[in-house]
Length: 300
Image (cartoon, rainbow, N blue to C red; front, side):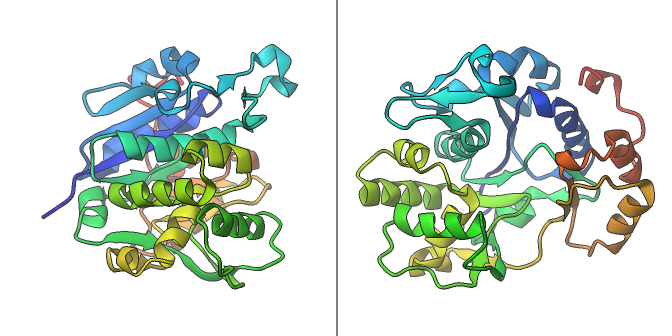
């Protein structure tokens, strides 16, 4: 029996223009999903309101965050960046909050499976979310042995997975990397994962993650599945990403984008260009063939 599949995107006002492009690409290319849930900071809801529809549901971040975690007024933070605070955990920044929102959204929303799609993704080929993620086994994307022990971020995140999940035997390096774009999650797996975190840390999963801070939601999910014969049997390991990605700082030009898209194998249905590269969105829009933004998306 096919599982229900939803799309889930956490976003914020700073990503509004990229989110607009994502929405247009979803409407043009994606099918097989029930709803596209969009979770944003409560005070950002008016800015995202033009994108709401019967299938695209806007939800406030406060619904998925613990009551003890409070947003610090922007005037009190460096560069006006969003920071949440609690005496239980210390400061928690926006990137960590988005990870909490992904986990909380999957746990609380009604669908059985979710495709997590961040705002910097753009679909350029047809994608059937139900055909990909709604089958008997959930696809588990990973890059084999891609994380070195001395990797400054991924290495720390992997070791923290062992701690959060209560694994006595440390992960061997080089370790598998489960971070990617358009990642599929199964709700029952995530329920089991958060319960294991709570058993291992003797704290709520939100409390444990806020105290740790240096973690990756995708590495947590992937490593939890990897260590469980039951969970491995319920997942299909795949090494081909659904998106071609660019993470360098130098901006791409039109020829670079065309080359990326031309080289993308058939399984890659989306492109992800890091926002810090400052590659013009109009150039990305043109490269994927979306043309001028429709009027209802020009609010961004």
